[in-house]
Length: 153
Image (cartoon, rainbow, N blue to C red):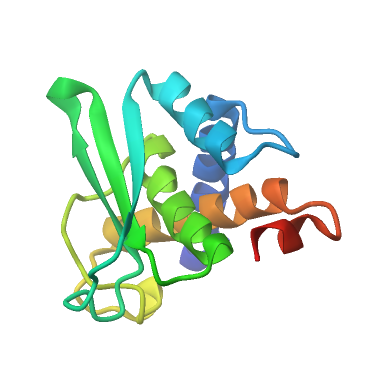
């Protein structure tokens, strides 16, 4: 098995554990997904649609987490379509659900795939891939039906 194959096997295993940890199932609303993450981690979360993102560049969302207070917030761009805001927030939920968590560094990563960003160490790139795969898994659960996605437009 190549190094890349080993890394992807680790990513898939982490994603599977994260989704199982929150008991995410098809048909959940986004509020139910957030609630499931809160319940799995014993924390309170808010998703904030930020109206002024003029200094964000290509950043689509970010997470602030205060472990001592057991609460956090996910900030997304209010100007984005609802389905896109949910996806950006789901990526941040992925960081929370990942048992290895993210490195905690604030990077503007949305315009650069993790494997192409020279600023990221291998563990950071892997954490970004895990969060992105969790976001895709949540989207798959949310929009499994052929017309469900249209409800968010």
